[in-house]
Image (cartoon, rainbow, N blue to C red):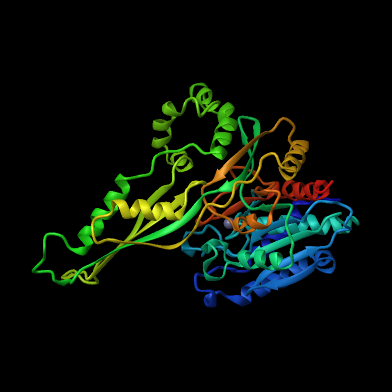
Length: 445
Ligand SMILES: [Zn+2]
């Protein structure tokens, strides 16, 4: 089996050329861009398309099944990623055109989706193409699932939810799910593998204050927008307390050896040192997000003109929930603190999905495969602050093995997800493909 960086870069370059941008309005997506992308996959990976069954789910979702020999007792393995990308932003700010997939002299590939998450689709597909070429057939069933609206949190027709429903209807439970995020990080010559067995929940709340409105020349002391301003301030002043959750305890313990002595010593036992750690965490936005359900006041609206008192003023607060917290609890919390007459409504969101095990067979298989390549590597099971499509599969994974992890080794030549100038280091592509090749071979034994 030949792992060829140059060939993988060429495959990824081809994928970048399709502007598969998701939209909150499903009618507004460029369906043709997705269909052309499907055709490109067909042409680039003939063995995959000859061997696996392929279905379109929803508008342009992709579900593939590689039927195994059935010799393994393991439940199916699902590899997932999303076809959609975020809008490219201002073209003039891109070093190279966002949908060119240009590869520069330093072997860096530029383009929207290069890191998030077409590199995953490329790695899965290349791994399968190579394995099939080698005459390999898994002893278990393997699924590939590629949604088309991850970047808008699923929206009104979450493709991953449609795929999970379809599998449920067919009574298919999964043995392990692998999704985007995570990977191999190198620090001071030491390697660590960041793997996410859980992620935070998400909810947008709207706060509204109604009023009779009127001419701005005859105002009362507080307009509805003034009261909404007080609401914003009150929410920020009434954060929920910091909290240590099991996944974050594991995360801190495993990063302890990488921190300076004083902090590292405390992180070895976060529970015992919690009172000392709390103020340190509160100062750091990253740590704060790991130890708290966060509230971010992001949008506000009054009237449409300077001399009109608003009849309706509103505010949006984006919240990210720690495992264990619920949207209902947040609703109650907000209702208990907002000024009188302010209405609280959850407009979009989901509770945190279940936390996967770090002792399951699947987790141990990932560990084994990674350790083969990087002997002595440390594992950092972590909590993902953002969200992924993988959450939709938690319900049909009775082995509690839903992991956000890729074989990508992060170098300073890879960056820019969701920003202009997204780019990836092509020199790591072969290692990534190799990880999936070996994972697929190791799984189910
Ligand atoms: Zn993504």
